[in-house]
Length: 106
Image (cartoon, rainbow, N blue to C red):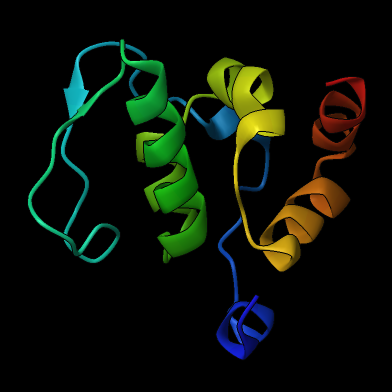
């Protein structure tokens, strides 16, 4: 990973229970989270879902960004599949040990 990934502060929610984002339909992320070509993530498409969660976790600037775009049950289900910077995974799992146990079980 890059030095940027090591130094970057990652937003975290106070509780996974606050993650009440959408679970169906399509989502267009704010430009400051997903600055690539305009894209709508189809939450019924597993690849889109995983990619969206990776982008939100990497680029969210505030806990509110996480609350609005991530869902607790979905995050717990797909956590082992997410390709995240080691530092991001470490801070999330330090705050929420249940994520680490999900990764170990996968």
